[in-house]
Length: 132
Image (cartoon, rainbow, N blue to C red; front, top):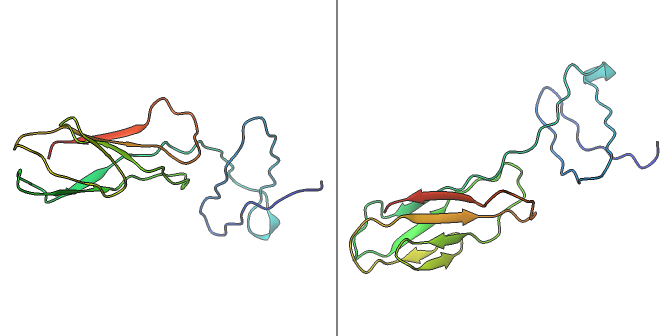
């Protein structure tokens, strides 16, 4: 066959990852060390991204400017668009490390929404919540 491309070569375990496109036919030649037959071949869909974040200071008051830190993880390593934040007091923000100051002490449900660069359809963006 012409036009074959090696996706990866892994010796002694490990995984090879590639981005497949719908409607495309792929042919795989799988073997193991010294050209023997492969003992296992499995295709899996990469799990969706996981939204996660932290704050500093950990237990803030209304006198503190809170630094939010996006710790989200994308198992497919596609990367994220700038995350969207809802600070729970009617205000929003954008970015990986936004800051916010609340007008009054209280519990505020903060929501982080992350979306990957690939625009792959997802039922909804990944979300994470906490009460600073």
